[in-house]
Image (cartoon, rainbow, N blue to C red):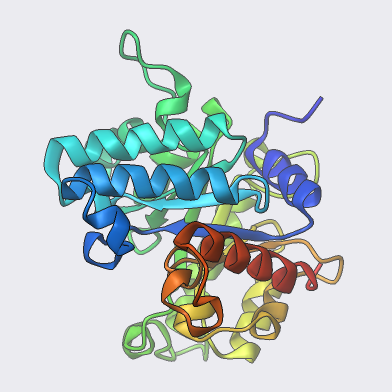
Length: 301
């Protein structure tokens, strides 16, 4: 029987698919295939598109990362659709990461943890309404992370703490050297590594439910962070549309091929826009691109 611990479930799913990857489901209505856009209202079109993408990718990859912002823009119905898709992805056997990037302290952090990660306590709402893991900000320190860590430990969930992000201007803040020679993101990495050493957070395979979002393009920085955070699985964006290739992500993995899960979004879900998939239906393009992505990063194991 698979361990209920988040990282054990994630690693088992990665082993089964032979691919340490997740597809980012970030549906923009204007970018949907024309046939989908023209068949329904914006929210219904997104619902049809996203549900179909989930059924296509589920046999190929171990995980999906659903970005709540793309649904929150449609207010209450959009938030409802986000939870609907979380449930659908879970029912398909995907490990679901809620890309919510929440952050605050005190009671606000506790409420975010309850809303975004905890097993629901509302009548008629089951555990599948919330994802297996979420992303949070690491820049509030332990005060902001502890409610999520406590929730993850109690409910067998996970979290990925922002340590080094992929946007170009991140370096202006996150790569600033401090008086002891470390960059700002290395200090954050050290703090998150300390949280991940808590025995309560540990799974049977040696990884903590406290993971990290790490996406520097500097291979030396990536290797340093990998060495400094032995207990954390890294969620690494940047593949495909953001310019990253499989080899760019090798420093994020340990020698045994574990320790990271690579994310690709637009290059998979909007593959019908890519030249190499012209002549296919949009569904065929998504499947072909997803298989190519999974095979490419699978070589890193």
